[in-house]
Length: 317
Image (cartoon, rainbow, N blue to C red):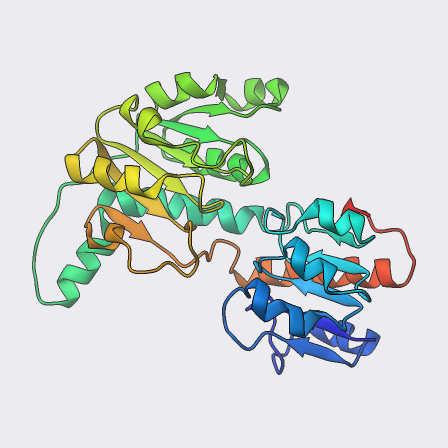
């Protein structure tokens, strides 16, 4: 038996109890040494002889899956699975699992950190002061502002809790919204277009699919309040980055906070030239607590499937 392990926070030699559990189950482990998500071309030679796969944010295409006749399970290290070709996995009788909810607190806290950092231009001021410049920049307060949450799942709920602590009004859009939860938490449920129009700050917590790709485009940005801030700590591609750049340059948008990009790692982006943009390297789930939870759950999912036991987190298979 052979297992491929690609998440960048699960590396050989790290003293993680979850990895020891996996090593006890299968000593023959292959690791990702690239330090980033793997491409289709990189995955195929590593994965083609594997029985199991602990998957990071790699591009798991139909071509990859068709090249892996022994593969029985893809255990996603995280909740999202938009980079896994689910139909190809089903066709090849490969079980796909994920770790829903285990990193919600970490990602939600980072998203709110991006909101605060962008509103007060903290990263920009830090960089300027370190370079010897004593420049004060006027930001905005969060108190009394309207926060629009697009996607009120486990992560969106964490952000809503943070926002209430800052005295913000919270509105939310989700096609599967829980009205009872909203009423109990003082959240106003609205449609997407109303959220776009009324929010001072918009935070995105959605999967990337055909319906959400470039959901935030030039047309929707034009309908936002002048000076609005957008934060994306979910998946790159939900925001049209070129449209956002032009809106930031014109002053239509007041700021942008990104933990996810259309291309990862991002190539030299014009967004990096702007002082009202805060960026982090898709690190929302990278806390000690979240990585431990994701590792434990992803590894247990894989062991359950390969051992023929029932797994509670099966997406396909």
